[in-house]
Structure formats: C-alpha cells, structure tokens
Image 1 (cartoon, rainbow, N blue to C red):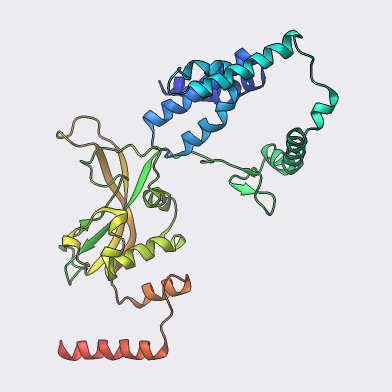
Image 2 (cartoon, helix red, strand yellow; image 1 turned 90 degrees about the vertical axis):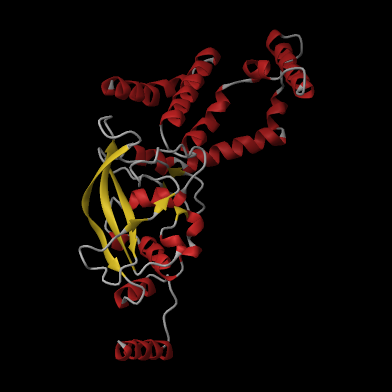
Length: 328
C-alpha cells in the first residue's frame, strides 16, 4: 500500500502538472486530479491551510463553460446571464460571426498591464528557476527585496517517526525528588494524552501546536519562544491559557516546569479501549525550571523576551531571597 501511495504521489506531483499546459479537456482533467489529490490530503492529514492554498491556483484550470452548471437560475441568475453572454461573445469570435480582434485591441490598458506584469514575473523568476535546478536547492527563500517571488516548500524531507515535546508542571517544592508528581499541559490539538483522539485542524491553523512539533527537531536553546512559554506558565498561566486546551492545578502557577520528548506512534489496537497513541520517552528535553532561576531569566533577557532588570530591581531581588532564607 505504501509503495502505491508513493507512486501515486509522484505521478500527481511530477507528471499530472504537465496536463495544466495542455488543451482544454486535458487541462480540466489535470485540474480535477490536483483538486482531488488535495482533498484526499485534507481528509487524511493535518496540514492546516496548505492544501487549500494549493487548490486556489488550480481553479484557473476551469473555464466558465465548465463551471456554468454550478450557477443555478436562483440565486445566481445574474451571474449565470453574464457568463452566458461571455460564452456567446467567444462563440462569435471563434466562428467568425463577429470580426476578430484587431491589433489595436492588444494595446488596451488591461492587456498592457498584464503584459508588463508577465515580463516582470519572468525576469524576477530567473533566480528561482536556477535554484530549482541547483544541487544545493534552498526552500522558503525570497530572491528580491520585495519578496515578490520565492521558493516555497513545506517540507524538505519527511521524518519516519513522530517526536513530540510535552511540557509538564509540578506543585512539589522538592521537584527534583524522583517521587515528585508531574502533570502535563494539554495543547489544542497536538499529540499529548494518549487517550485523546487526533483532531482535524484544516483549514484552521493552531500555530503553537505546529511550532511545538518543529521544536522536537532541535534542542531547546534554538527555540527561545518555548522557554518563554514555560516562563509564562511559571509566572502567570492565565496569560497563555487561551493557547492551551487545559491547565492543570486548577489554573495555578506550578512550582517548576520541565519538557520531556516522547516518540509517538498510532496504537495497534491491542491496547485498552480508547487508546489512540503509543509513546515512549526519548529524553528530557528541558530540565526543571523555576521562576527565580537566574539562568532562565538571563536566557530570556539575552533573547529580548523579558525586560532586563535594573540594578535596583536586582538588589531588591537579592534582598528578598536573603530574607526568605533567614525565615526558613
């Protein structure tokens, strides 16, 4: 089955696009192939709005005559009449009933503007085309200062396993104790709780869930926004509550937070009812952090995610810590 999927994918993405440059019937067939392929991805995957964006330019494959049946007498009576009028004028042109366009017609402002934009696009696309044929091809890169043309690609390669970063918190003061109880923060859609059914996000985009998935491809110090998220959970969880599905500890700030990386795969049906995922720990992604951790605050300051503290604030913080130690 996977071999068939791979062959079909290559055919649709490498061969079928050539149909878009063919005469009308083959062009429409090629457009239907592309739309059908994207609809299949929408139904079976969670690629957010990417598939819908791909469908949008494919609509150019379908002319008015092909789309005419969609316009019923009501409530699209006016639109249908306009389309029928354009089709009749096209008939007049092709059959010679009406005199064909003269050379002067090509110098009408709309035509001239279209030609200017065409030549501009061709000129700006030179580097894009050269990049496509390069052995060191780059993706998601613009080649002009106004970013009018670019190389777009969602994924340069596809991973064979699903790793996810799970943020956990604890209310234990002795959070380093191996018996400390840690509870997970559930996101809107990304895998977390193994008993939660995978959701369908298309065409809506849960940006934070998406970024959390990418965070699993690198180390935590490459993603300052993730450290900032953990800091906000320590300082005031209510500020990020809308980004998450649920807050443990009745919404209170935990004593410490950490991040653990798991490898997920779909359950094979031998587990107890209601289990959608299997997972195993890969590693500790980010060690336990507390609100007064100086390394945490310094990291956030360096990356511009918190305002650097003044010397007076630093002295007051030191004095507070000394006072707390004396009381203890």
